Length: 410
Ligand SMILES: Cc1ncc(COP(=O)(O)O)c(C=O)c1O
Image 1 (cartoon, rainbow, N blue to C red):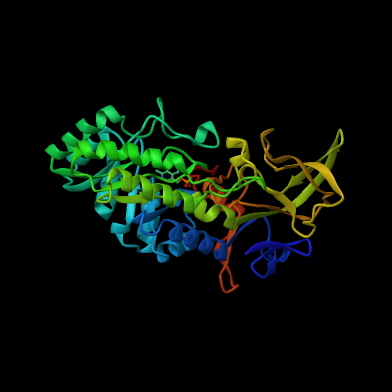
Image 2: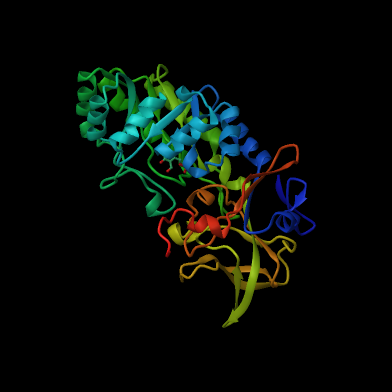
């Protein structure tokens, strides 16, 4: 578990500062126990209502985590051939992998067909490409229900003007063109956004897909996507999984939709709270009463605050109690003014060399990291449920930053 004891942050049985000391910074540390706890919570709340749960790899494709979730009985949901390759490298059963591309090329589809995974098409042109590839079998259609939600406009993936999915008015014609070339539509899929706290919205998505499915006939599965909200701020509420399960059960009963299998595909919910980014305070200055805490990480390693104005709790690993606090901005070392990880926080006066912990950094954190400013990527460590420490990804070195350049002066 990730917890504060005696004003120190612990990950499993280890003080976070000790992990940082031993393995260097910046480092992403994941707590296996937390992931398993989230899985149990989700599974038990929707047991008997939702038939299959997929883990959305884009949240965090770390092989240890993907394998852990697969071993817990989840399928893997991929949005790119690279994620499909990861699943293939893990050696998972392809029938438990689902590919939902967008702006999908024929090469992407060919790769998915070759691996034998489940496919959702996101446009009429993708459906035609599948026909051209000579694919015969069953697929899903990703639908844009023309509504969506999310904690930021960039995380809303349904609605007019969204690039995702097939418009409801075109679903019938896409299903017909697939049928004509021998492909049957067995699933309707929608993913309408990320950071959705209202279980009612998922019920609306379900009802919407159910309505469309009845027109198509061959559909057996309704996939209502991921996006389940995670508490990032201390005041944020946890997604009410139990209530969601009950509401969905009621909707299924009311509609008489028992013959459909319901699928969900959360990513963030399983992993966000399990991750901590540990960094070292490199520099401290003051501006008009605000302490500016410069760290040896930044938006190159955690872009969410800059991209979505996302909130991450920040604490000093060995001084984690909120007393004798000062107003601080925690910033990175990237040459961009948007490189602010946390603004206007009350934390104890940081000192150069302190270890800063950025919490809830298990999802869309390392998976979105880049080498911008030619900074190496952090390493990734897992604290296992039996309190072992496993380095699952080595820290990059400078040579990694130039390895792919093919031209050098003679
Ligand atoms: C198709 C699809 N499914 C599932 C997800 C998972 O979303 P989240 O990690 O917010 O649960 C995403 C993320 O955007 C997605 O694009």
